[in-house]
Image (cartoon, rainbow, N blue to C red; front, side):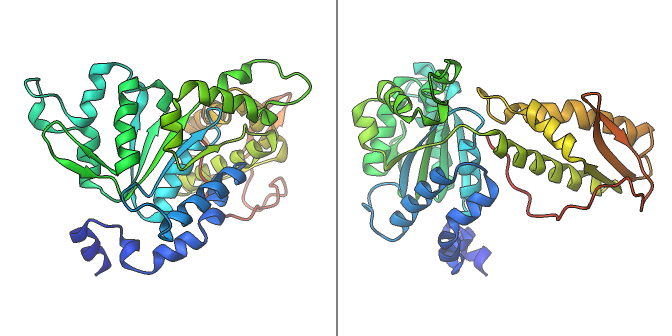
Length: 341
């Protein structure tokens, strides 16, 4: 019944039931189990959303307008993804690198009269019209043409946007999240006496240079994301391995990694400039590709056990028999956490 009502009314299922309040109550806790190393950012976001959902916001504005700032590969985009999942609403994402030119911005609200595609509406207005309850994610907002910011001012101020066909679309049930890497270039500079994680003041200055005062003043919060530490990346390694375990389960294959193998992956998968993004490539090159050969033509065609260790600073694969003493102690399987992005 909830699904039918939600579909007809175009509202999330959790709004029909009491699950919405339960999701809000545990929002920060649940987000922390899915994205690592960003507790302060998650607490700030959860607090802001609870404030809005408690009815202590201006009703003509979006539920919230937030700017996520910080280096690449630390979890900004993933927090938006997980937020939409936990709130039971859709994620509508736009990559702002596609809207760097003035003419490309018109695609968001439709082409002006007399231009090709005038009758087709805009990508942004149509998406929100079809999914009025959503998390609207504008990735790498600093790359967008300045004309886009004039559009966003109207959205953040009045909670609506009119396309070139004259149709007004409400943004009042939208959680607007914009991400920026402004200030992340400073990571490439050597720190003098202290690490990059403590240079919040420089990040703030970079944001002030990048965005106009009228834009910043309309934000509900600027939420900084910290650079990842090597300890956090070690937890992300476990996330990738748990995902791989789920993929191999259908093939009757059990994979186990020694602590040395985990440390090897964490060391090579972490980059101070790019966060945990390289980790996916490192695992694909050093674990998934060798496993593919064994799954198709080798010792894992009919399933089995694979133990990944380190020898001479390289990953090595062993295929012990079930019950072998060479297997490490079995780890507890937990909920698969999310990749930081």
